[in-house]
Amino acid sequence: MLVMPENTVVAAADAPIVALDGITKVFPGVKALSEVKLELFPGQVTALVGENGAGKSTVVKVLTGIYQPDGGAIRIDGKAVSLSTAQHASDAGITAIHQETVLFDELSVAENIFIGHAPKSRFGLIDTGAMQREARRLLQSIGAEFDPAVRLRDLGIANKHLVAIARALSIDARVVIMDEPTAALSHKEIAELYDLVEKLKAQGKAILFISHKFDEIFRIADRYTVFRDGQFVGDGLIADVSEDELVQLMVGRAVDHIFPKRDSVPGDTVLQVAGYCHPTEFDEIGFSLRKGEILGFYGLVGAGRSEFMQALFGITRPSRGVAKVDGKVTVIRSPAEAIANGIVYVPEDRGTQGAVTGLPIFQNVTLPSLGQTSRRGFLRIAEEFALAREYTSRLDLRAASLDQNVGNLSGGNQQKVVIAKWLATRPRVIILDEPTKGIDIGSKAAVHAFMSELASQGLSIIMVSSEIPEILGMSDRAIVMREGRMVAELQGDTLTPETLVRHAAGITEG
Image 1 (cartoon, rainbow, N blue to C red):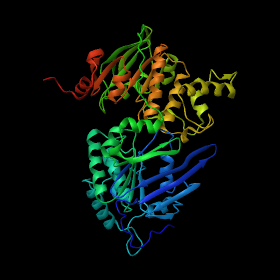
Image 2 (image 1 turned 180 degrees about the vertical axis):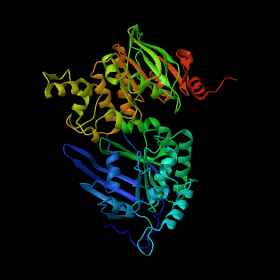
Image 3 (image 1 turned 60 degrees about the vertical axis):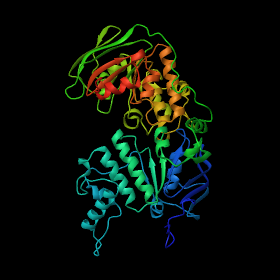
Image 4 (image 1 turned 30 degrees about the vertical axis):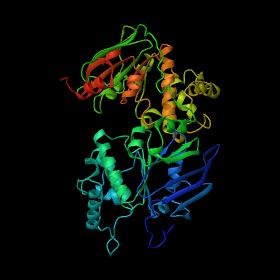
């Protein structure tokens, strides 16, 4: 087990606490990291930036002892160490707060914070009183005011996130890794997280911050390090780099057209929806969608957009409402009936609803299209590969091969697999629910370009998005929802950031 030197002091601000030097990690068929470097300084936030598949997740697993490097050195306070297990990394003061941290709803907050390392009495039993006191101290240090005795299931998402942070700090971490920490937080909760990061900096913690959101990076980071295709391509001070320069380092090229919307004239009406209602989620939803049109749906969290889309796809049942495809009344009671009528749905939660992570890429893509790739009840592998290759290549999927397990892909590439899966069914209407959530700027450009290409070929697209630039850049029209109701339909000169925000927030003119 790694033991830190006695009387360890906080490193000077001009010397890193942790330094990776020439780290290489090889998996069968792919070199995930190739001689990368990374330095984390006390009292500073370093943003690790790169496209999906750049090696960010791999380097986090090297830092936390999950992966062992095949080359290079890890140095803590200038001394080479071996982080051969997650426990060794924890003992060295390195902890990670992941986007989807595993917590236990039936345990108390204090038990979640100290699970695996609870304070013990002199008889070797868990000292509940000491655990509660220390949990309260940790929570107060990060501005959390709830009782450590409360069950985790009784907390909201933001407070559960604070529990995960307290758990990470319970090991007296010197290095805190935050991997997409704001993905599930509201604007208010994000502001509170920023305050927490400032507190951690003041305590001398070195913070590695991973995010695809440039506004966060430039708001919170002191330094940046850029990876591309598993290689180190640059680092420096955030104050010395522009957003355009950072993008060019990330993708190796200038991304001038993140929203490459082609000009097109929508055709005849393909889908009509009228009077769709649900007892608790949405009420009186109605609109039309034309051939080759991209219709945006915007709203704040809880507006009911995803819930309506799931009802339109047959996942849930509306209490009433009528849908017509090509003018014909269509009954949609299940996803199978939706698919049969040419309507498909790419969900926001691709991890649990979109991809089957235990299967390879080619089988994920062909799952809904087995009729195309089988003969007399027997699957034809060559035809499965051909179908999968056609759609994944058009989406610029980054993978070692189509045999690769989807669970081993980056988030952006998983999203591309899910989109490819439904496009392979050759639908009339595709519903894209937050199509670029959590993916990098280069992958966003690829998805947007493909959306535009599909619309120009006559596919009708419903795009649910919480990103105002995406709604503005890709939509022919936009519908705004608030509290389960449609409150505006905008296009042309009326489709502006101000009108979107006003309608979504219920702000009246004047």
